[in-house]
Amino acid sequence: MQVNEKDFTFKVSAAGRINIIGEHIDYCGGKVFPAALSLKNTVYVRPNGTNKINLAWTTLPNKVTLDIDDLLSAKSLKYGNYQAGSAYFWKEAGHKVLGCDMIQDCTVPFGSGLSSSAAIEVSTIAALCAIAGEEIDPVEIAKVSQKAEREFAGVNCGIMDQYASACGKKNHAMLLDCKTITCEYVPIDLKDYSFVIINSKKPHALGESKYNERREETELGLEIMKKHVNIDCLAELTLDDFNKYGSELPGKVYDRVKHVVMECGRVHEAEEAMKSGDLVKLGKLLTESHNSLSKLYEVTGVELDTLARLGQEQPSCLGSRMIGGGFGGCTISIVKTSEVEAFKKAVCEEYKKEIGYDAECYSSDIADGIIVEKL
Ligand code: GLA
Image (cartoon, rainbow, N blue to C red; front, side):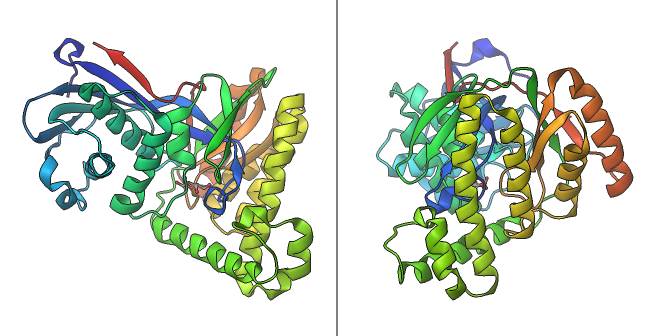
């Protein structure tokens, strides 16, 4: 469907995200290091004076009508469930949800690990705020969006994606403390290097159930460690205490907790590397993070492992890792800017040879989170 901007009252967008480092530790109270992308979901919205939200998409022929008094019944929709969940929890939180027409235009590729779902949830709520004349509170919107993802999409996710989508800042990464839900903005200055995002195009089937399983394993790990040390979340477990008491952790739970402890350490080192401009160090940390997600946390798979390895093998690349929940989706790599095109070509050609189908490259800037424009 085509959009005629002058038919709408507001144009509201929220960003997709990358995560430089700090994977699978947001739900353990860790610090993570995401940044918002110019790939985003845009909502064109106008009030319609009814108690219905009419949804249409620029990229789909579908049309869906949500009844504001019965949003729960939209939970099982294939398209429209994220919007319904967002509106439902926004209303539950005591906000005004007005009947409206929305056209959704998403440039974040679906299922890519770049948080298209967070971008949809956050932009939908921000659009509801705009037509209700409410002030935008990005942190509250992020928290409510996270609820929508948990309850309507069944992913027991942390706060990283929704926070980054709502609170992102142009040319900055966010050092987000997931325990306190506060962030420090860190300027991204990669000198003559760039981030390159490549999608493995592996459909991430079963990703949700495995994601929830990893969460349960870390929760069990926390419960056991709490018998020995005084901590509230796994991110507070020191390496010393892990070395002392880790043998109490059964089987895979040991590996999962080790990943969390080491990844928290890497985020801290990455913060220093980013602030001091030590890109070689930053690249190494990315590669170490990938190896840990592959071997200890087991959320990669042959496609992501191949893509990260092919990136790491290129002389123009300082490091490469999977991002997001895993089991499919994208890698990010730090690559010499003058070599980016050659890097993409070499990695994609070799990937096709080894995996049998094409990977896909994206170009994106680091951008603001929520943007509201009056039309
Ligand atoms: C998904 C979740 C996030 C986070 C990442 C892994 O993107 O939505 O909360 O847990 O996986 O770091």
